[in-house]
Amino acid sequence: MLPALPGRQTLGNVNAAETRALLTALTAALARGQRAALASVVGVRGSAYRREGTRMLVLDDGAQVCMLSGGCLEAEVVEVALEVIRSGVPTLTHYDLSEDATWGLGIGCGGSVDVRVERVDPEDPVTAGWLAALGEGRAAALAVPLHGEGRVLVTPGGEVTGGLPDGELHAFAVDAARERLKLREPRAVTLAAPDGTPVFIDVNVPPPQLVLYGAGHDARPLAAQAHALGYDVHVIDPRPAYLTPARFPGATLHDLAPGDLHRFTPGERAHLLVMNHHLDRDRVCLAHALNSGAAYVGVLGPRSRAEDLLRDLAAEGVTFTPGQLARLRSPVGLRVGAEAPEEVALSILAELMAWRRGYDGGFLSGHAGRIHDADTHAPFPGG
Figure 1 (cartoon, rainbow, N blue to C red):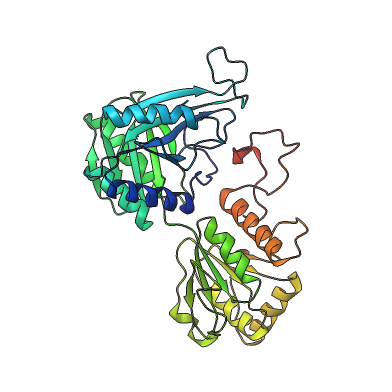
Figure 2: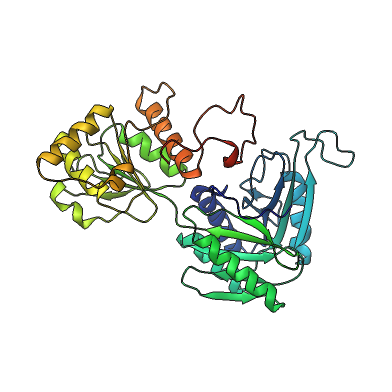
């Protein structure tokens, strides 16, 4: 299957936490003198547990890091990867997951996937550049023809590393990679070149940033769960006793009073959440958030709280454009009956995932369309 660019973009199926685990294991393995192979899902037809761009690392002793499926494919892929590690020759394998397939795996998922496996050569400039981009959280796109030789690494600044033997195919791969990098939430995809050659475009972007204005008790499970999901978590609070690494492991901490918020600039992929539980601080933080370039600004608590904050700001002469207010979400979270702080955190992160990926956040049971196709779901309200 050679899908064209979809109309409504959704996020790829690899988060920063998976990438972090994979790279940590790879770095340790290479330091021990082990060899490794990287398996990537490059095509999906019908139902499958993961989507294009999902990666799994296989070491020369058979150990694996991350998963390509729910456990359906891993044993088969490991065997292929071990042969690739021995031979150095990349492979492309088609796996049929249909239950009634005569020569299939008989798993019953009703779909099939294509998996490309390649030995990791850290001395290769394209591989080295790609691994560096993954490890440093920099935007980059890797274009690989699924038939033939060569690879191309492209950065948003236009730098190109590597190349393809065919000039027209090289130009197509570079242009396709650049177009992917222009999207707000790009995902990996396999595209057909003009000559019919399938070209897999893998994409890496900086992890999404979650900024919490407030280091209270309920911020702790939210920060922890977000970090586990691969968010770059930042916590802002003027109280040093609350703002400690022990309370927020893995997060970047900012000891800033309301008057010092100008010293912090949210990233391009930032999601901001006002949750100080202090009206004066919340008011200043909300103004800071709405005046930033962040596409998502949330206020914890009932709708009336956000309305009160906006009314107080207006009384001070601070107003916002319709475009700025359109980015404001309150209350935040999906309707799952959350009460405890851990449950509220789950609700908020579920909303963020739905908002980022273009889904409505409703039930899958009873949905007639494909699970992973955002175009068959209603768009996220206001997204």
